[in-house]
Figure 1 (cartoon, rainbow, N blue to C red):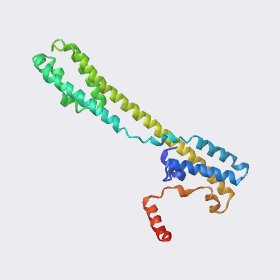
Figure 2 (cartoon, one colour; figure 1 turned 30 degrees about the vertical axis):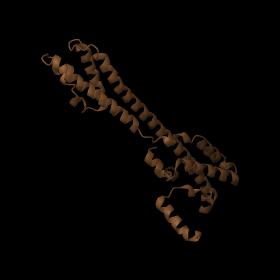
Figure 3 (spheres, one colour; figure 1 turned 90 degrees about the vertical axis):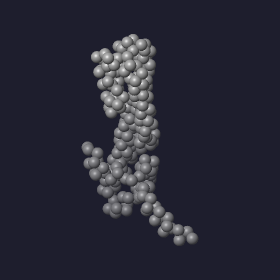
Figure 4 (tube, rainbow, N blue to C red; figure 1 turned 30 degrees about the horizontal axis):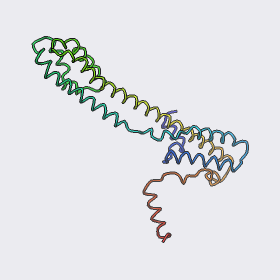
Length: 233
């Protein structure tokens, strides 16, 4: 079922409520249901609610964690690599190879050109530059160049890998978070439908759900406090 259809069909899935309060809403409903002792027809709903609550993972509260830190690490490594390329071009490539045909190949990987590339392409083209460094280090009388260049490049590659790993982990957490939320919402929705078959009065149905936990927004809370202030005085 597409996500939009799931939310459209199931208002429990889109309640403006924190994860902690949504789980407590489910737990409160389960307690009320057990206390009501409505018979065997409601046993499957008790089981479904309990299973959904058991699977509701509170450790996913930080699934919206920002990747800013990893992005900044990559930017730092990128700047270091581009600076190394630029310094090498000025100090060794241009003075030693300017009159050779290979100089045109090195110019393809100047800082100004590499800096305009997206990160995956930057890594790919930088790898090709490393091969040129390896092939012409002796001609440039810079035997340490391949090792030094690779060390700086590896920092860039590592920052890229860590950023991708973190994004993938967060993405999986968000999917899991959505899944356990929808599982609890589905159990609540099905219980509500069963309750509507049992009770004629809506009040009898809604007494099983503590909607007081729903976040109605700061403006509503502020208005409620202001209305209560004279009474408190």
